[in-house]
Amino acid sequence: MPGETTISQTTPVDTSPLNATHLDVPQYILITIYTTAFIGGTIGAVTMSFLLVKMNTLSVTITAIVNLVVIHSLLLLTMPFRVYYYISQKWIFGMPFCKAVSSMIHIHMYLTFLFYMITLIIRWLIFFQWKDKVEFYRKLHAVAASAAVWIAALVVVLPSFIVQYGSSGNYENGKCFNFQEELKRKSVKALNYSLITVVAAITCVLLGLQVFIILRVVKKLPGSVWSHQEFWAQIKSLMFISLIIICFLPYHIFRVYYIEHMNEDRQLQNYNEICLSVTAISCLDLLSFVISGSHFFKQKIIMLQSKLACC
Image (cartoon, rainbow, N blue to C red; front, side, top):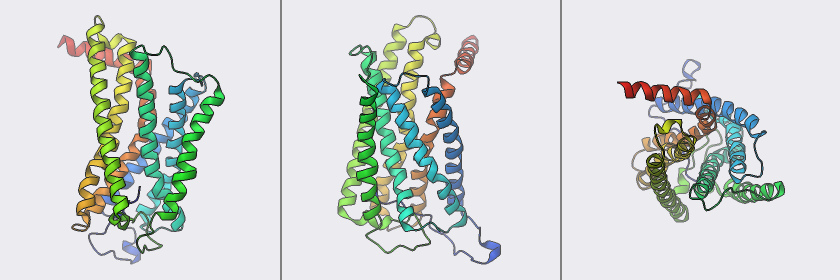
């Protein structure tokens, strides 16, 4: 989605050797966020990959998780280039690659959102007993479904991003992620507003339905809910929605204000870039799923709940 912006300098940058690596506060924040996402996301992707080898590859849910690992991995490959740029304050990899790296974070955001939705819908179908299990008939069907999504994303969407991204303004070769001029186009504004509305509406529906399901499970289960597998399954579903609310929703909410006031305050470019970087934190989801699914973690939660109950 066009409109990613670079970090604007609030003070003139001294190009002398002593101050060549001077960084502003927003740059420190961006470096910290992307570095954390890269390290945690890499550990999570590798760990989850080993676990997926032992799972049922015909399951639609498992197929969605496999695709989640792939899209996270693609974004993780671009993060070192982002971190290098924010540290050096100079892009040396060429404008076409800048556009590819810049567009990848948007493609990652919306594909991750899509795979979260698929996983949640499958879990709800099983919960409401509309389906005992949701599986592909053959592995080829799973591959074909995944291929259709990736063809649409990388063969159709990505090339159009690279060709049109940054076509509305004059951008310096040594700078990257500075495509805010694209947001002045009416078609791009309309697309942004449509995406913002859709994401916000779907998130509200997902959260409301999941809260309803959890309350229903809590009411049905006897004794401590923390010891029941069904309750933990719904907590995992809530984690997907929590990631959407924490990682994706702030960017879309701020986007509304940014589009309307981007010419009034250059500091808004910094805030927009930071909000966009927060979407990369969703790469930590695989690591959180591995940890929350471990028997050790569940035991500690039950022990903590028991101690709190005693107090």
